[in-house]
View 1: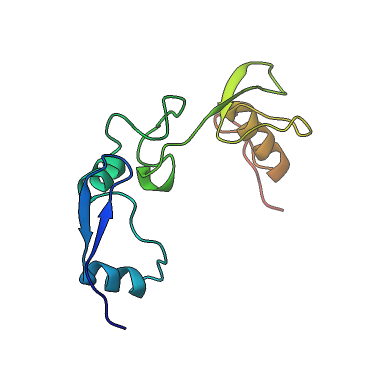
View 2 (view 1 turned 120 degrees about the horizontal axis):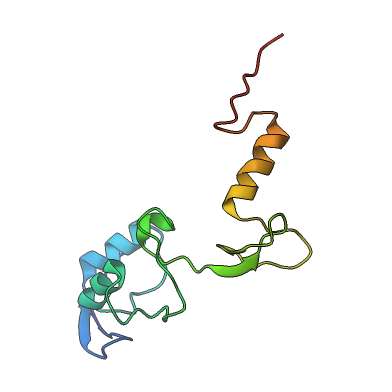
Length: 128
């Protein structure tokens, strides 16, 4: 399949850019079906997480390990911990039909279910 350069318009800045035959071949080799909607400079700025993010101000970014290697900000949602009744933030939308825990209570419950002593509790688990 031969590819021909295409002139496209960036959805962010409105400038015209060329989607080269080489880029088209690369997209096809990766199984990407859609043409890019942003020019290379807007794509770079978006990946770098520059100001004016299209995600809006409601999104909080907690570093490169928060979500997809830092490429997309993770939206946090407020919730009340079902164990200690403290306000917390969780990376999912609480539905109301299941309890939500802060990280400390979640870790305590998980350790209790697994039979492991809590860190720093001084208890030693002995094998039979």
